[in-house]
Picture (cartoon, rainbow, N blue to C red):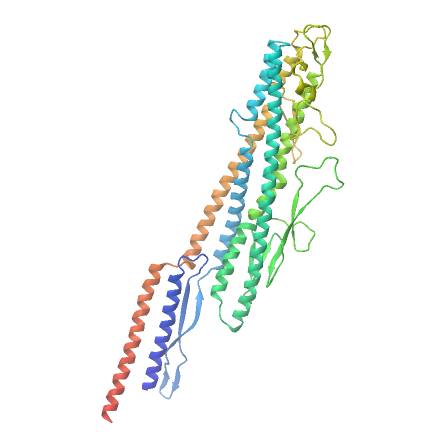
Length: 482
């Protein structure tokens, strides 16, 4: 009997010691990212069957559970993917919006107003050398602003390409780590144990993957986690398939190489485009394939319209050397480009003759009237030409308007996109934060609660020691009676 009591007391000491050790682990990792609270599960040992009934044999820790809810994980990761994608898209669209610098004196609207205004001044003072010089300057400034906008778009494209490469590298690295952890978890749990710390490490990487790529997770019976990206498998057991980027050159090659060659993301050895993409990866690809080309296309349309409409009026005018009559037919105001180097926002410039000699800028529409202002007035009136720009959107719709109204529509539309993504980012991040809060309520470590539990276990541990002391006193009494 006494040996049985000692055994029961000893099992209590060992069980509560293990439970205290688990609590110590929780407290030590209270601030460790990705750590899930652990709990020692105790159960009564198998009793002994005696003639008069069953006799207990003590207690033991049969497992240490990891407090985690798979449904809360899935909910958080879905919101985290949407939030990560919306935040990335918002930030990149904000950079795109900053290209225009509207409304400021340094923006395109002001440059257009100054250009039309210089022609209005020329109409007031036809054939004035100083006024022609101002027109030349305003035209050069306007073309230079188009060039600058295009350059900034190209820089953002290059930055986005680097960001895409870096993001894919991160995804591939995390996927490889998840595959490795899958292998270690399956091996560790093959004997019936639970690899709590390894699962925490894997879940932390799965959270990061959800933000980067909008991945989904499918748990397997053997403890492995299958990771799905788009409609394909990124990680299966101990194997991961790497992502790669491919630039899609138009076929057959066009006469003019596009400024923005589309990109596609590939998975493993598959030649097919990986889709749909989510998270930050999806936003970066959308920005490179849709947003930047869309804005550049609108700027190119404006540049072509400006060149076409101004040249059409300017070539109908005449220039004079002093008051010599008749005048000489004027040439183009802007360079008309070539097949290889057509007029775009990045290539628009003054015609070489106009760039070299402001006196070649026409104001007269009458070959016999140096002081006529017909051409200058016609070009100045282009300010209000509501048919100056005609643009077909990617959806097939046609937009028509003046240069200023088309620019305003471009900037306003971009601003609306930024506001929309800002709202989306705020909403999805709030959902992700709520999901994380619910998840932390289950798996997070509350040090106050752990300390309370520690005191309870300490009392139980003390009681077990007193039981041993009592058994010892009983044994001493028996020995004294012998």
